[in-house]
Image (cartoon, rainbow over all chains, first blue to last red; front, side, top):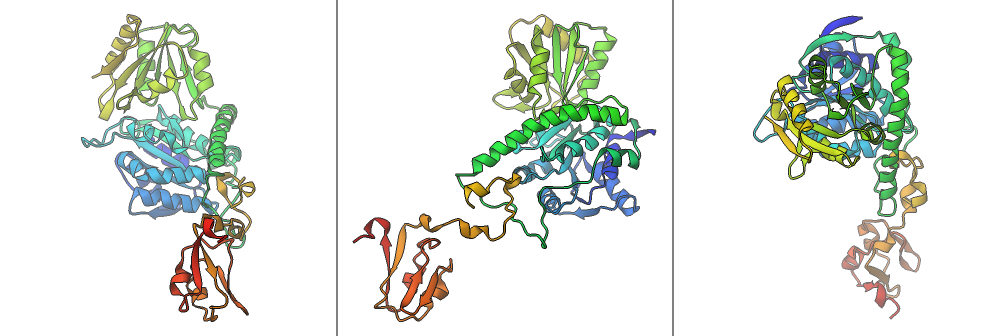
Length: 375
Length: 93
């Protein structure tokens, strides 16, 4: 059924269909609409989940871990400072191999205080061992929630996942979303059946000490789980498209790339703006490489795509201060092409079609690598 | 936990009681040595030992060196000074 719906509400609708048992959550702008809608579903009896209204994000993710360890399916959501507060616990969720799914409404970090969109909150959590998906549209956000549970709970993966939507510029936007029925989702997503669970009748120890002679092996296991997530994402992409009869990309979406000599690499809602510019101005020699899945990083797909390109520009909505764009550095490490960096949209600065168009002109006329700040 | 047991994803231990398999005695720098001639079997060392490593036998107190971490609390509390803390390399003397 197609419906005009806010992206935050689309996320809540998808969560309702995956039927989480526990939702520990703390409101933070711009994620609050997700929490509000879920609370409404629970209050109306449409979702039989235990909603835990915790006192901080640190507690939200801690409760999520405890619940997930007992065989519960868990959902939570946060943004910005809230995600930063979760930081130390994020490693524990991934280290314990608990497939928690968390929506992030991307927002800048203080200081100066800013509630608007950029990707510095989730990209700063790059090394926590969580998978990270970035969404362009409300439909993609809805689909990615369903997809993220399927990947995370796969026994070869067992890793937590973040589903990132741009704060305000996507989270608060109303779009047409093709909503599924409970039956559709039940057929797609099997019950969560973990390898181990906390159960007093059958006791196990979770979170023991890992001495220097074994800690490394567990980190290696997590790295292998990421590699197997890459394979699973590829296979599950086909299954998703077939089951829901919708177009969907798992790790990377390529647009206009067939005859391209140049490419723009980007993540999130600005991909819509880029597609619009390429279409409107009928630019055939520039393609878009939309990164859907930042962790695990789609190395192979990137390498295969960029090999024939003259140059690439990576648009980043986050800066690793002292080393430049975050995604830029990731792309640069995967290829030998000329790669330009563009820093844009920090703290919710508008990224307009005009600025994208002028960036395209600039990279066509620049031979040596440069860094542009789109202000 | 012994290395060969650590294979489950997330380091889950699915066999209860596994902590006794990790011998923590090798962490020790000082080792309590009991002079059984002086020991009066009062049981104070047994009471104070934080690792439950002391048993009172017929001939005096006995230390389980597999788990004793050498904290020295037993020696400090012995009323007849029957316990001496000895460095590993001085043990043979």
